[in-house]
Length: 137
Image (cartoon, rainbow, N blue to C red):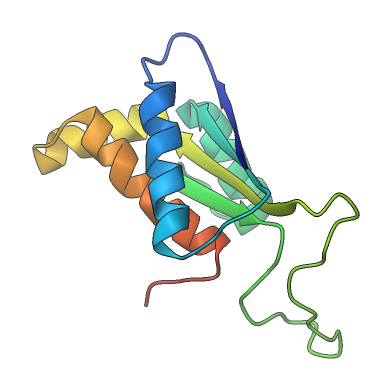
């Protein structure tokens, strides 16, 4: 069972079913099965800007952020051993959260000449990859 928690401001026109489908297909592509949980949050530019500033030290907005519960990239705290995903007592693999800025998604889709739904799909696939520790160069 995959639990996808979707949070969105009602003013953003999103298709929750399509979001669930994209996430499920992305997880299946990587052979992630069983009890899994992740969040998808659709926010505005002001919130995305705040998140970037707080967590990345970047004073701007972006289209997507991923917050994995397991930091799969090298850490500056090299003395702390990496143990991988920790098994929760309830046996649920909690991957983390994906945050999309809806205004940025709309802008990016227009620039790329694609639909907002296609842009959301592409960004969600990208975000799931990050939650799974698959990073781009």
